[in-house]
Length: 249
Length: 179
Image (cartoon, rainbow over all chains, first blue to last red; front, side, top):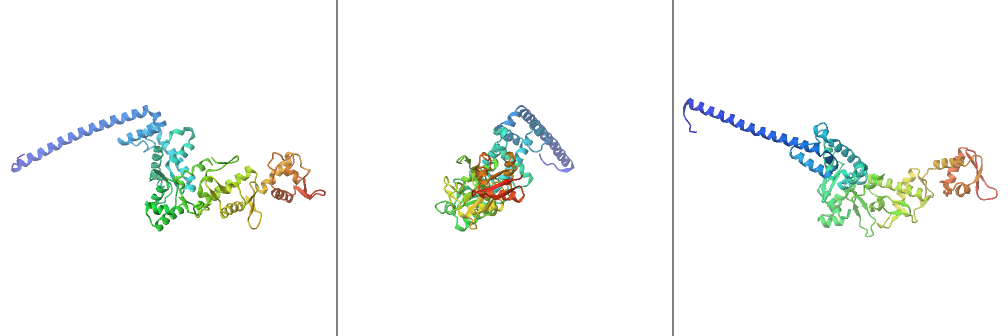
């Protein structure tokens, strides 16, 4: 628009701006309405879907995990509250709370043996033993979800990765990178020696012994002086599934 | 699962570090707890009353994982049982240990029940008869260690439930019940 001088020109310009604004607002509103409508449709579809496949969601772990993924994409958290529509419809809130409680129980019962660090697979195994009535129905994904809900309690439940394994930590121990690397190294045999740590990780003796001593003090490692080669071995119950037997007793 | 005869061994028996006395206090306490339970369980099911530290004992080594308990570890586990009243050293040098999977008091109760069940309330029996006689067959008293039996009998004597007297013709001691 060509700029015209004078009061009239300014007024015309202001009026035009206003009109543009109104028009822009209308377009935006139209878009949001459309989006809202789409989202509502999607939600109702999702609800419809959930209602229809209620049993599958409850009983089939992989179905459940896919459903969770779908929910996450539209910003619905079925676990956010136990009172919401989702919880009422599916009762899955209770399912995860129950899992959470059982996970805490297992972690406490095995803590003395593994120092509060347990292999996720091992945890799942114990969880299934504990819930004998529906043995198949708990997946690792479910465990992880339940654990993530435990975080709200601020009690330091955390999942850490060491190599291929996922470990669940139930004590407030801070594991640094060195500790993590040792745990990773221990996975192949269940134990490490000082010599191995020095050689494989390219560490000095001091660094190796320091990290191993900390792991011992935290109850995460046990020494073994009984091998005939005379070399001390450091075993890690959290990577060798030794915890199983406490579940029986 | 590994077995010793008909005895089912716990998982930890196959985990090598459990054969080395652990340096960290909490870990060692748990380790000792597990060994205590295992020793008591094993002795109860196999009817073993005395463990000699320097001799071979099935629980002291595991050939599958090639581990053997050190003398220090053996003594630590048994000392823990002694501290709980579940065993007693038989000598000052701590070379042999009496295992009490029933405490002396419990053994005394078992004797009293045995007497009542068989109507021996006012009878006379010899110590040997209690240990290997026909009446005790199939009860826990059958084959009981003589030291433990005598200790339980003496306890009952103190309570006035029986009298122990030296037999005239045999070496064996006689028991006069008055339950």
